[in-house]
Image 1 (cartoon, rainbow, N blue to C red):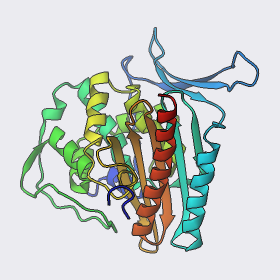
Image 2 (image 1 turned 90 degrees about the vertical axis):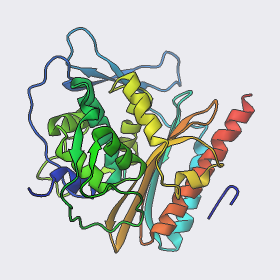
Image 3 (image 1 turned 180 degrees about the horizontal axis):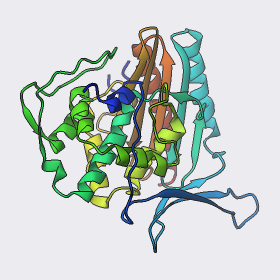
Image 4 (image 1 turned 60 degrees about the vertical axis):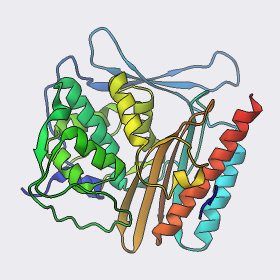
Length: 340
């Protein structure tokens, strides 16, 4: 459907494929964030929405600003929410889709809307974005880490039921950490991801989740689940340059614009639309999950969209993501035109 112009196994990899992840312990210095602090700012005028302000604490003199969120859902986006609900219900009626959620945040004014936004899913390869953030944080702490060379000398047997595969690293070759990041994000290569995980500081990865306000993934979790609203914080942290440096955030966003998955959010957009995005697969042959999260750089009205789906047919799930993406784009584009 084209809407426009027609040793062991590394425990982090279990998380990326719907399994579990280990958390570590570490004594952080003052250069690390130790805890998330949240507060509410009351609106000054009657009828206005309260604002949730999220800061990172643990430093001596500053509390860096992470996120500012309106507590209430946007009335202006209620029509879009209804249209998305109708799209999802149409797919669910065929029994090819069992559940779907979406979360939209408009960057210019902070308005948001969502549907089933608190339902949880297995993120699958969406977890490669937290890995990306972790690796870039490590490079900030140890400059030059991205240039470290790693040899791919062992083939890993992974029990995956994936429908979308692309370019992969080759056994016996050497790659820099930067090159492995390219394979992990652009092509969603699981072998490249495993090599990065084996060289990744587990405590920094766990700390990232804690700083976002989530429980750190642990050994005893049968699975680690996130909602569309929760996962969106990772993409927002990159756009806001709220967790890693401005240069590294720019690098991460630019890398995400080269993600080769084109059957979801991109398929619902006009050709040439710039999107920083990542997709993820999870589930099993009988119950599949397909998700995508992206920052759509619509001129004058950029927005962030996260969609998670469950069902029997990956093709139907990708079509659903594309239809939701198209509906959101048309709404955002109309708003952009109306304000010109």
